[in-house]
Image 1 (cartoon, one colour):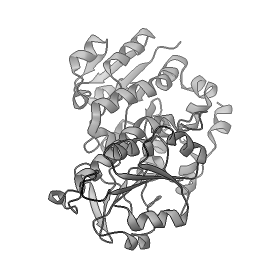
Image 2 (cartoon, rainbow, N blue to C red):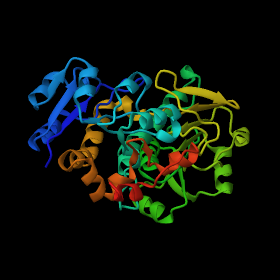
Image 3 (cartoon, rainbow, N blue to C red):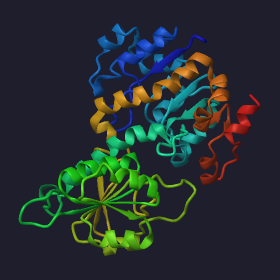
Length: 378
């Protein structure tokens, strides 16, 4: 076991209220002989007080700068933003959601600084139903939050058609079509079906759909995700919820700009995955402060951190699910942890100036080394 100083800072992204570690898990690091530095106020947005962190054994720091400069492992939730670039250095390990393929400038800074960075969204699993466990952990919350956003923006007082997304006597059921039968899609379907909507889930994985069918009521149907069925859903759905993470290297789409002309007046697209020009060509990431925009007359909601709206619940889930990976790095040291754990290795993004995230290398046309090959030589 190696002693390590673990740093937790307050997130500075727009409307980001989550925190990487809850007080109970600070105690876990302390029990393993590590020190935890927490910026004052880091947990306030999720309902955790400085006193709770102090009682758990954390060292409270009044400034983010103090945490960044003294930490050996910086453990956070969201990507590195420009005000944080100055803190990056070659003897620091970073574990967070990085999304390097979408952030060229951030990738430049990670490489230039020599920092060792691990993208939690790319940490993998042997479970075929949960290939990306630290995406799935937020996915259920994002799916449910996506349906709640549709419920809100369908109201006439919020610019919608005045449609209650529920089964109301005397009116036909609204139609909610969900692309993706993973944790996110099932989260959206759980809420949409409970409100009594006619719900369709589209996927290419029959096994996933057959398994999900056991747990959903009869108002949920399952369709193979092909071009014909997507067009059918576009024509008669009141809400399309996209829950498919699009391959970062693909140039095609499931829903094209031209397809939006098929949709009903007042229909909307909720893109929970919110990959810029990903599965939905017209998608671009938005924020909680400015969440919607219109393309071809269709409302798009593409907030890229929906779980932050439910910050306490999502912080508990994030902290519990990511803790084993962060603890492994702290206990073993980053090199040994990467050698021992292929799933952690899958998330390795940069290592002392070398890009090891294949998708980012391809998308940004940068030289890269596959992480398995790179780690073998450490």
